[in-house]
Image (tube, rainbow, N blue to C red; front, side, top):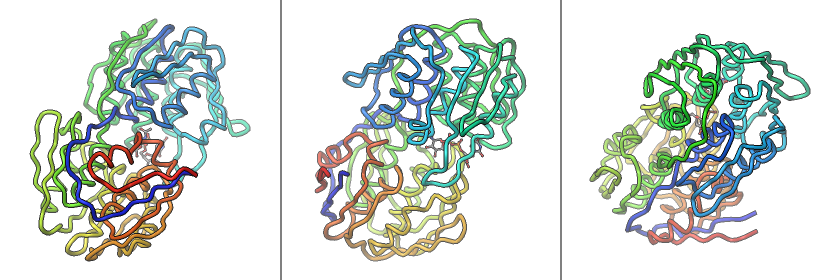
Length: 417
Ligand code: UD1
């Protein structure tokens, strides 16, 4: 298993471009199953999660090719409607094939996802949406068996905000007979991107960007070509890299509007920004002020930046409170940050972070995707050497992150294991 070795305390400078958004690409890859033929996606980074979803689609019978940030998915010969345990257990987003398979082929067998490092993650809302559209759902031997003659439009009301369930409901309803209304839909930019893709395919969807969506089913969709949106979580992570190393860096190829809440919170901590249409420059500050955050659905502070922001707060001049409302157990990074001399206490879903003068390098272990990003950020700021093991987690969501940080002047290297 590969490791990172970071010699911290170096200033960063320069520009760092943001890649395409993994969490926008994964549902769109699944949505390509809705039409027969070849869809082409641009601005796709070479990430383990993308490789994993490619694998899921290949099992189903699609031909998937990747070259130079372009992903081609040919769904002409799909004939096996299953996402097996071996793949779903490695990547929960495999559940995204449920809606498209049901909608196009009337059947799907998807392994029940187990728990994961950030806590129990049920799929009841996905299943409720499919049942509301008329699918028969059975759970057998750890698998979700879903079937239908033809899905039928209906009203789906989500009692809780769910990105994944909204995506599945959308992908299932676009080919359903009649009208579907989705109430309390997620409005994350990744959902808006999926809606753009579906509309390009020929779907009829009204209410984009709002919590109420109206979908009028169409008999058939066509394959399309689309350029994927930039990754807002990667952009936010790089901003914290600038902040925690007290550096002036510019994040390019991003959509500043998508990370308004993280930027507003970084402003409260004292950092200054210059924001252009697709670029953000962060400037250093003398003192990092403590700021309390609560993770909430978009457009509020994203859970996927909680660990990174907490890392910055370990060096704040005082105490900050971080409340996690999306995944209440998402604190695996805390014990590792405390190994680097941070002072963080957890009580239920709330972390109290007492700022320390400095972090000091140590050996730590990555436990999930965003936790590993947080440890890299901590390593960049810590004095001395930080060794991070199990970095395959970070490869799921950040393409060659060490190379890109080296380009900014960071002393980070990958040791192949
Ligand atoms: C997606 C993102 C993930 C992000 C999360 C929240 C992808 C591939 N992953 O995950 O990075 O952290 O959104 O922004 O895009 N829930 C239920 N029942 C369900 C589904 C969800 O109770 O059937 C709960 C979850 O446990 C959680 C909350 O709803 O507490 C939100 O989860 P959801 O938005 O569905 O997250 P994902 O789509 O899995």
